[in-house]
Length: 202
Image 1: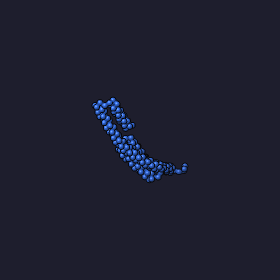
Image 2: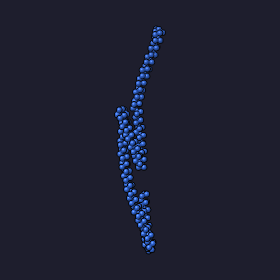
Image 3: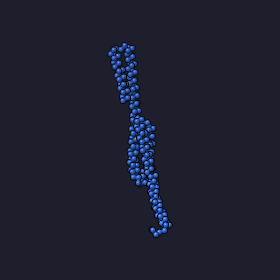
Image 4: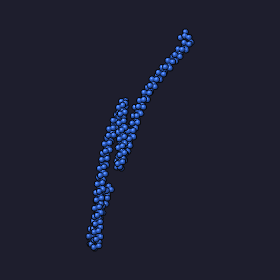
């Protein structure tokens, strides 16, 4: 090395620097390629996975709120809203399953989507049962209302007839025993009406 000329030494130094620069550049290219691959994986697999999970969660909550509103208020509009959101849940679960099949590395998405689909199917079945029960209760209430109306009409007619009979007996000078008996009938029919009203309220 000592015998080499200065120009050769400088040339060797620059050559070594160029080799080092090339090695660093190669390492940078390898690293960037790896980062690019990871970024592509993130963009094509994981970000859509999170978006689908969020969509499923959002529409599941909206379904639950609508169905709760239906169960409490028995308003059909809530049931329709719940069915719309449940259809959206099924749509996003289908997208999640397709995404998991396209990218086999997303094992948790595949398992989660299958479990969520089973739960959504069970929820849909329970929602239909709820609608059936509520419709049956509405019909029962209608029948009860008709029966209550007939009951109250019969009681009112009987009360009117007893009031008329009482007036007639008073006009005709009926005995105290007759008037007491008539008063007892009026008291009893009023008690019966009160019982009917109390039963309806309860």
